[in-house]
Image (cartoon, rainbow, N blue to C red; front, side, top):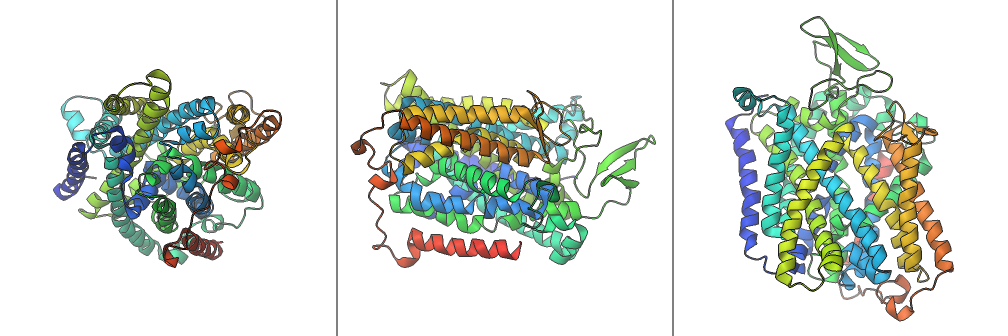
Length: 603
């Protein structure tokens, strides 16, 4: 695919614009509060769009498209079961604690509720998670650029190996994100996330419309797919009867409760965005405002994955072997060609096809949406679609890097290394922490090459970090008897439980190693995602039980120290002074009604 001048111009204007935002905001970054917290002065609708866009990075756009192709419409559970209920909960119940406590980060909130060691542990684990998440976005962007063969001509003319394009793309993306975060901090990231939201809607709506029209609408799509791919709930009675490879309990407990609430209620990446608004009332509205478009995003990011699988195979496909097309190469060798628009996965460095434990070629589901764009979009619209993808990568990286530099500066550097420095010193440290976060993300990008679906990778990281953390938050918020010693021990034990479970289990057809089974294989799951859900369940359960037991044998804090940190000891927010349609409770009820309706329609 040769990009034309119009396509290049659209992408160039985007890069100029995002860097321009950073330069324009640099003069307003006078204090650490301006850099790390956007001055807590932004309106609710801006923060609401940024709240959803902070989660709408490469993991969301590429990962959900990949999961749609791999698991079918059941991927919508990541929204209708695994996001909206938790977003409602954090808006109605948890934002008053976060905003009212004046905590600058989630680890700092843990210090206020528990103690220093709990804060330190969470700060370290969260910093690692943000680095991996940013690295996944960086990896996805490099794979996209490599797939488009954008720099092939340049590298060939310079006599450089084409395998170096992967490394070059990672470095370029890192430099751009570093530029506008280093200059404008969280404010720059938020405004770019709002821009990214509108770009994704503008770029993906035509893709879905054209793709559906090509396969004969929704009914035509269902006829081209196995029946299990077109139903969200059918086949969930047993793990082996649905593509997701998980039964109802594993789905509801693992995704709908532990992973979803663990992410939306405790992940500082999104909480940071809501806390940047100008009042507690608006902070409560932010997740609820974000939940409205979030509810309909499956139609923008999951449907393209299903359409990629359903697109008719190319005419040069020789035959179908185990559902995967194979074709004859120029030398007569039979090579894998993929399934629909999904190609086989190749090593980004040496270009060789990768195979599973049974010798079957792996499909590269991460390329579902990029290949859909190349297949359906003409000049101009293609440039817009690619810019939407690039924006999601940049946004995902930026959101994680801003969360990393805040936690590093406030919770680790100021907390334990240099407590008495000036505010200007912490501002400088925040900028240099941005550089460090980018460098570490580059390392994480290479670790992500071992998975054929970055959403699998992301949920694995969440099961290690967010799942046990949610148990700590849940008990701390609703049970005043929970102690700091218990919280810390439970948090560490939950993470260890996740590690052990991962080391003892393995998805079907995967090799022992980064996918699991590196201790011994005592149980096999039908898919990576099923393994992730149960890893999260074990992590949460171990933490929850141990925290309760240890709390009963340790001394709790006095009630006067827990006002504003425990639900029963905190004054409830007043809503009667608000207009009825702006009240968080009204928004929450409306969202629940829509949510139930969508689940019934696509059951």
